[in-house]
Image (spheres, rainbow, N blue to C red):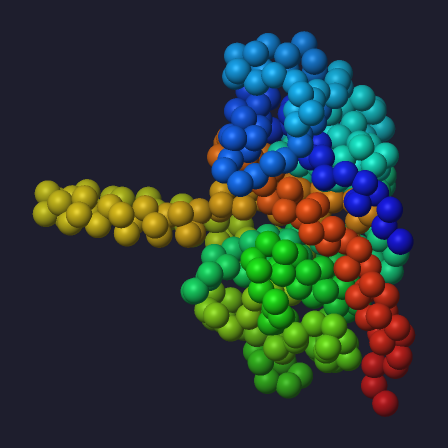
Length: 352
């Protein structure tokens, strides 16, 4: 059973790994601590000599809700994950993960090296009983709200049972973060007709039918279903998911740039844009990738929330608050029970 999560709801924030530096992380922590309705307890993990002055400059003082855990090293974006974990054992990322392992924090938030974070989390926390591979779960906008995409890049060479586990992980995350009581789960493929898709999809589809009741399986879906209200959780392997999430983020930037260019093309359009500013701002907020700040690595004996390397203070704040919701819900305890039930059904022959 998972034992490290219920002990604390404290958030260990890796202060040193992001592209914008520790000053941006400290600014994000200040925003999170002053967010209306939120009450996270945060441990900043990083170089004391750097963080101390930044806290003073930001008007933050150490207390029961804010502490600093010293770490003398930094894993950079250029470091090779496994080498960095071996050589930089006193890095902010490694020390933050160890706080979760030791029960001193309930979740790690980091905008550092993705490969190192996933490898460090897997090696130090280990996958929960019954889960073979962890998965990244990203929240994306769709018609009428948002959906969970899983796996967004952790496991590019998945087996059918991994995708079944992804469906369970994604369903629980969707309940906690999006408030959907019975999330509809769709399996991403190239056609909804029976037998359409490769061997991975065909076998996964049969296995997902076996665990219906544990999840609300809606069947295979195609690309044009993703951004409609068709399903709440989109399941795929990490290869497909990573392409999808990066394509979506690129498309958001492309349309934003194109729309701005067209609206400034002449004075009449500029006037119309000014009159529609409220609608444009609302749309921008709905499709903004910073809204949830990143993606959790699910399926471990502890929580890890990966923020984008280029995250600004607003995105990091969102990641901290999303991580706070995860630990409050004690989600992993419920996931482990459903994984055990699913594995019992998966042990049965697929056909016959």
